[in-house]
Length: 419
Image (cartoon, rainbow, N blue to C red; front, side, top):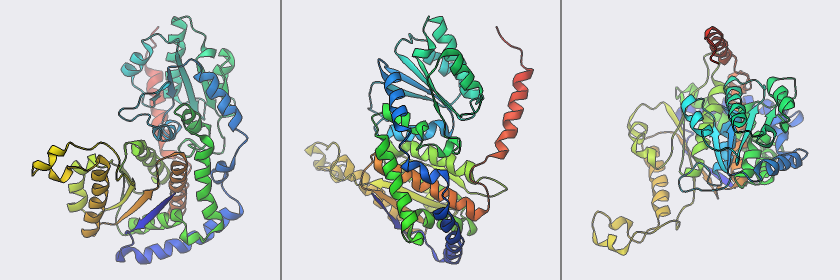
């Protein structure tokens, strides 16, 4: 599925790395005996029929589906949809998936300012009261009403089981609704219906996604725990943080892995950024960011750990005309498929970082598909959970964010209403 070329264990972190592995021994043993709900999710089958039924109901006759969600309730689904080309250049499919994860009055108005007969809306909020998402839902309800359309035929929802605003609206309008996993929060919810329902519309196989994740769990539960890449990754990150490398750079080489970097950025930041602890996640994309970031990576401060993600692209893509060989400036490209250049740049960047003494790890995928992305997502979720344990913090809460929400609510209350 994938393997890791580890070049990140530099001499200055070896004692920290060994100590971190020792701390994780007891934690992994505990997880084998009483796993977190997150580790049981890949084996779940009971929710598949309801998920597929809602996907079929909402997808029938749809040319466009707007996913109204923010943060982890959207980013994981974007990763899974992008595996099949959504959100990448040159991709055209029906239904078109539009992830409305940022609140912007102008752009959302443009999305609604069109005939909505073939538009559908999926609303996702574990709390059932996420202000940004509920505002978007309110706009959708108003727009549908203005066009004389029945919300029950255009809107579906995913919400927590407790009484909440989204469930009350679903009851009022007769909207179909699926339960959000109560034990799993948004940024870890990618393998639940939150991520898998949009993946179905993009052409994904939810079972294959979970199977890929299950393979990672099986390796953790039955193999040598110290050989588990997620355990090693957590120890590696902890050791480099203790050595002063407080930035973690994620650099994949594929358009279809671009949203993975944004998902990772939120997962790492919100799970670990507490009590003055954690490291800064930075997302980049190769080869394009070799032209915007590589100078800093190679010649700037040695304060970063780099994770390169690639798959073998040799022999793939278009080939320049033979005439390129006659020009000294283009001869290198003559007869070479585009994928050869991408592969060469992955290896060249990796080797240049190693030559400069920069700590990197290189994750090579055998393909970009549902199974490998499921494995990759589970790998990084485990790595994050294990790193949180090493930092002695709770990976699953976000207490500081609540202060900003309270302040925003007060500002809203002080603003005059507009009819």
